[in-house]
Amino acid sequence: MDMKAYFTRLTTYHLWAQECALQSLEAIDIPPDEALTLFDHILKADLIWHDRIAGESPSPNLFELVKSTEQSRAALERCGVMWREFLGRLDERDLATPITYRNIKGDNFTNSLEDILTHVLNHGTYHRAQIAKLVRAAGGTPARTDFIVFAREQEGK
Image 1 (cartoon, one colour):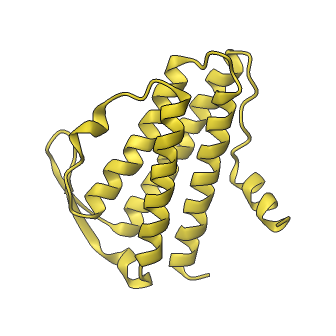
Image 2 (tube, rainbow, N blue to C red):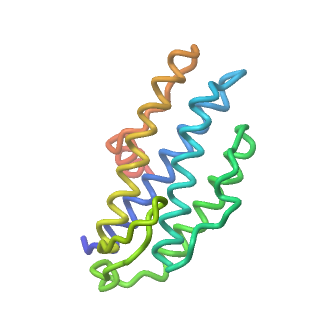
């Protein structure tokens, strides 16, 4: 598998897992605020990193807190479109491209696109685990967002 196909598959998994996590939040009458905040954090990080990759500063309205599953759904749909369009334009050679960006504290860094994508995908996994714990504590059923569950579903299609 070439690296573009690899990152496309992992991004498809990331979006699938986000959808599963959101569905677990939607299934609770009153989702925990902390879980909604974490979900919002994952989506905002996706958007911020995409802006950095594109050489843009994050939009100021990105920092408005999402407070409902409806707002989360709209933001997730936006992220899905954004990542699919980005990956559609991506060339295998682009993955080694160094990306220079400024973090929220104002410090400059340079990392390869491959490293940034790897970070974004792992970041989502980390916080989805926290969301699952909060969903369970609220009496809900946590989403099964393990990669292997995704892979099994994809094989069945």
